[in-house]
Image 1: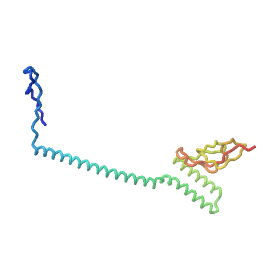
Image 2: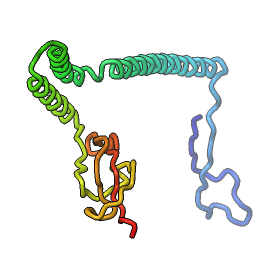
Image 3: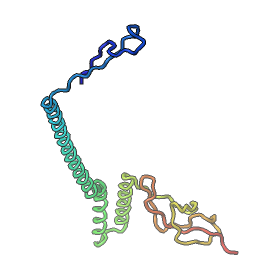
Length: 195
């Protein structure tokens, strides 16, 4: 809409003739023809329609990409769960082979000391493999203070030789995985003897 300003005083107040300052007069241009206006609106609508179609296409592509990403992550997760222990298993297999050899020697007329040595070597191999993967045994020698966060008390033993609340014996070794408790050690705990 065109607005033009004209200077002049078409209607001057009575009592003041030519003394008054010129006033602004607003003149509105004639509206465009209906056909021109319709053409403008159709062009604007067409442009918005093309923009809308482009945005819809972008949305569909992004949605397809997101769905493909979700499927890929799900597949990777399944493969990790299925094959994630592969490197650990490959490390354990030599120890299993040594156990198999020890058992075959035990069933024959082999030297018992060789069998014991083979089992010791296998134990060391297994322990070394576990350490590679962040698994370490808890040290719970007799006299170690009982810690309920690391130990599970299986029995209380009256002992005059050890302080009350300390480990007397270990029934089953405990382990940590990357410094987090994996399995508590099962122990007996000293208590003061009854008088």
